[in-house]
Image (cartoon, rainbow, N blue to C red; front, side):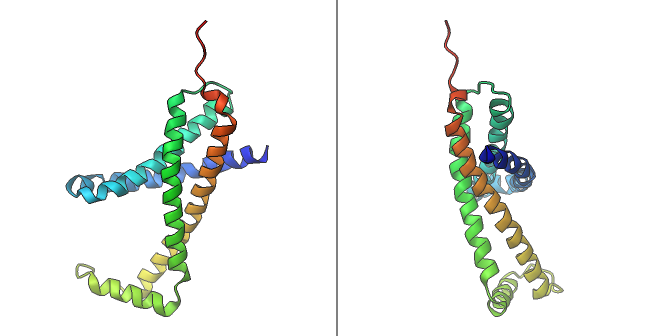
Length: 171
């Protein structure tokens, strides 16, 4: 069962990614309370965290121990999987967009960004911002591929092991 083995490996890789998104969500929690437009970003970060840990619970208790899971766990996995899939797709498109920019276009973009931010320290050079931007885009590209692959495999596992979500009959 190579798909299950890949799903298991990706599940363990997803845990640090989910922790990072959980930390980012925690950091924007207070600003989101003051700025309701940030609630969407908070919801998106939370959905990746919820999906990761609910699918990991399904893997560890349902698939590996062959134990029954609550039907609500299936709902949590599926709802947050779709949101995580969209989020992974957005990360992928953004990362490809940044990494595919030529050096001149990227330099112009960063220069315009620095000029539009009057609160930035004066010593920040465009080369530093470009290297940070490329590093973050590279990380987001890798994370998005892992997220999308995990969600696709996770939804297949939920379908394949759907019998684990059936509540036991009382006799």
